[in-house]
Image (cartoon, rainbow, N blue to C red; front, side, top):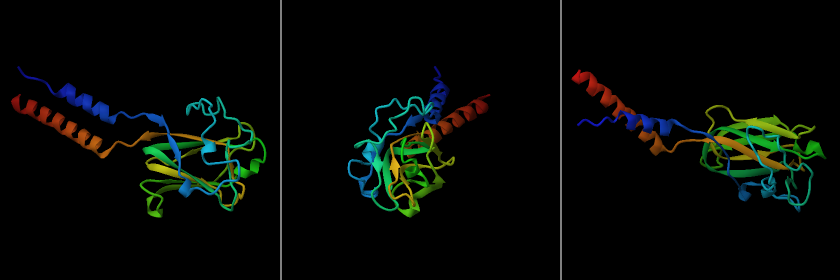
Length: 202
């Protein structure tokens, strides 16, 4: 009895090729972040329990009112906040939420995506000169260029000493591990051999 490997190969191809966008799991990197103003922190940009949905990022919204430990508030010139991702992602976008007072404190924002380390050589994209809306819903989305890969990113402002971010979220598509790529190639090769065998036996 002949066993067909085609369904197995097709299944492998579908499994490896299929990828879905996921909400980013962010971890503050304090060694790469500026010291915050008292009663604020990098982790404060992640602690509002609003039900973030990347498809409807402004419904619901986080709390926009500045308060103790519910945001990052810069305490020096050109402050930076940095985050590590739980893997390497592409098709990235970052959703930034501002405050409902002192709205100029989230102007002139730079975001940098890196892959591998914080070294300049691992910078995969830099986006400059954007800001969070000064009117309700005090929100902005930053979208990375297609093909940009990152496992970390930073958010900064070169001009705002008291740079403030209330909340920050994001989404992206996981970049397959090299072993997954090898599996895809192997599956394709098996499928090619099967087709070649059929044409030879015809």
